[in-house]
Length: 415
Image (cartoon, rainbow, N blue to C red; front, top):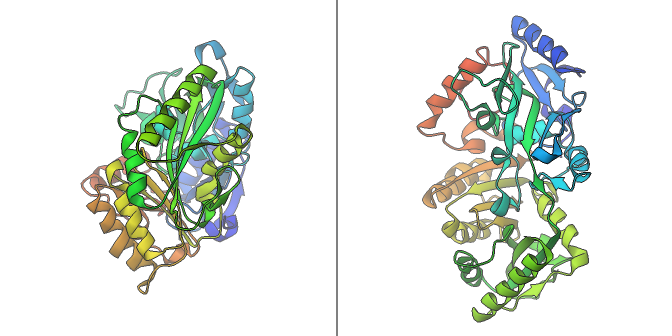
């Protein structure tokens, strides 16, 4: 993670103690036309374009209270600056949880996770943040508070604020308070893993998950040096390219039946599945969550593709950088790759000339999660084309932030 001072051109940083103080700060910034950079846990500030205009840092760590937790309703309302670990600790008292895998949970804040729409391996069985945010409050670029969704007065503007703000990178509003629906914590969690010699063998196992009678929480394909000697998966022998990993969660009988069923299913396909030892299960979930932010790779990308095309896209990445590390949420068509080799044409040629066209060919797109020289990146390189949606996105941005103050220049908007 690059230092905060290297990522944001801050003239000053303020830490509001409550929503009223935050609103007043944004109102004053609107009058002065001062750019504002919201700062949650500081774990994803290298996501998006490098900002070029000096502005005011708005640290959210003062807004971290639990407002309401009616556990029997399986909802919780909290301020956006609460860390993911603190939120998890509150929910654990009632054996409930938010089943979204998140890196750096001790530092990352809920507001930042929603703004970046971060998710991990459990997306296959549990969805993304958009599935759990049922109410939201935020401050727009004029310094006006607005609300949407459950437990608040319904907005009359016609927008679904919960979905609109998720993944907006803080460019439409500074998220201040969130109501989440939560789930019961599962009683049992286990992994089944199967090593594969090539991508064709991986494809056979993954295709079988389309018709399986089991209900996985995660379906992952792991390739590269990062996974060759994993504590849970063991040492990968020479000649084997990676490992397909499936996670199950539920009651003990449910998980035991699904593990047995998948073992039989993969044996019939010629695989040699193994069970991850129970004492290694939690560690493997953690490493899967941390993968996008671990290691020293110069470039980390995420591709969203048609699930049936992920193996073809991965083959293309391995031709560019045979030693790159890959984590594919294969069941969802996501590929996260950590690369250190870019070919002779450099970073722009790699992204705009190779990876983005390859993703389009496989009905998807590529975005940059992080790059160690962010000032070299263009909007096209980081976000790709917005297509026909671009003009709609820009109009919505103008309505929420007419002076373009919130996270100016960092998202996919032009200008």
